[in-house]
Length: 77
Image 1 (cartoon, rainbow, N blue to C red):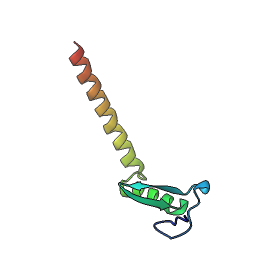
Image 2: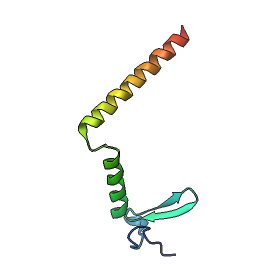
Image 3: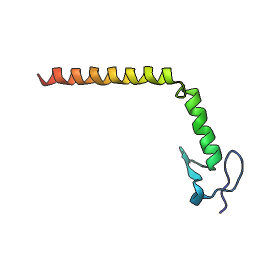
Image 4: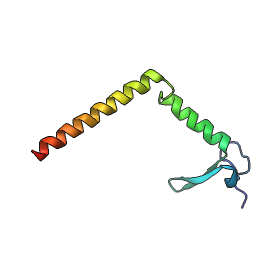
């Protein structure tokens, strides 16, 4: 069976990095170009290409970890 990219309709070649998987129960396949374009779009939509936003998110994660750690040590006492 010749699979085609669900976006650009090019033939899928899994040996060359194209990907076949599932969105829930629906089979999907993407060529490397379309997959990398979707990945880039997600990065842009979530602001992960903005250094200031990334630094802010890292600081929030550190605060969450510190909070969880302090919460766990209080339970142990």
